[in-house]
Length: 110
Image (cartoon, rainbow, N blue to C red):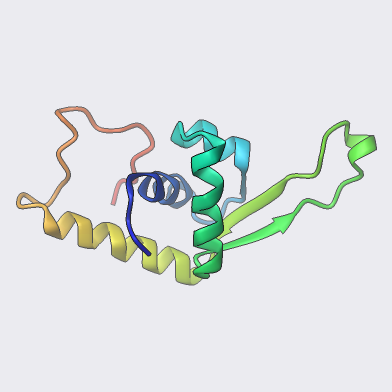
């Protein structure tokens, strides 16, 4: 998996609570990514086996909204994502990313 900034944002959001299921709008709010960027990332991560994606089982008429598609990290995804972030940290001379003096919100604390 190529670690782009959008991929890193999505993985960081999902790794904050690795067992939690998230739907698209939730992830858009967490990552500040537009849908046109987020959904291709989710598709690539799902195709790579890093994410599981399941439709919510509701009656859209009774709920008053469409069913949501929930995403969660697979065990492989958790392992691979953590390794990808470790590799990124190892590639930076002082061992941590330079955020210009400001830590990003929602950054994993590992």
